[in-house]
Image (cartoon, rainbow, N blue to C red; front, side, top):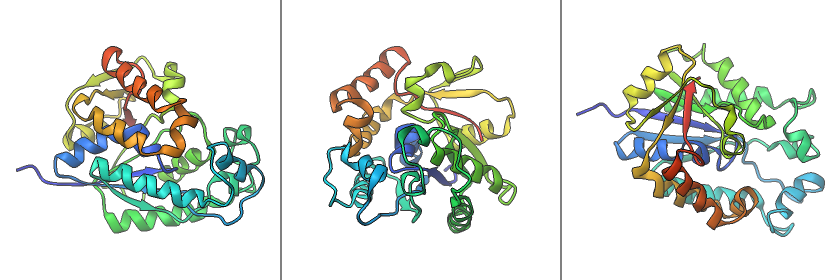
Length: 262
């Protein structure tokens, strides 16, 4: 019987890991592996104002709702569907750290944004606690500042945990909006095992691999749809979200799951 391993997905926000690697997570969990997802920026804020308040009002939520608590509940449901274990970091999202517009969220990290040290401490603690064989984390496609912070932190921690294998996912839904980001060095695999992933981590080829995991496509759709506050904002409607999955199956485009060396 193959050895059961621990895998840790490190997600900036409550949905990133599921949108980007939900099928991979579900497949590994179905094989009996212990799959954890740590979401970094999930701290609730009482009485948000300005742009941070706008970020929940534009989802159709009233000001008095604890937006992050609602999103944590959605994440719990999504992870339950996939058979993975959620953990939530107590760090503030970028709109609560001095980023005052949607434009600023996708620019360079601000000098006054001092979250990096707290993020490093938190990630180190969780990696030591879970002791994963493999870490999956964002590549930073889309350039969101919270994703940039996580990318930077993982790069700094790899030397401290050299026995761990590292892979990066191409961030969704940013990839589907700009599929030209994928390089010419792209392979496609229909098989997913820990050995396949760890071999990809160690090949040093800079090749990206698309995983076509049609057997877990419905599970991933159901998990993505569990983020009800995000579906209309990110995809237009639940029907359009379903259409992306249909496109992935028929044409190899749409809601792809792509990994590359970390």
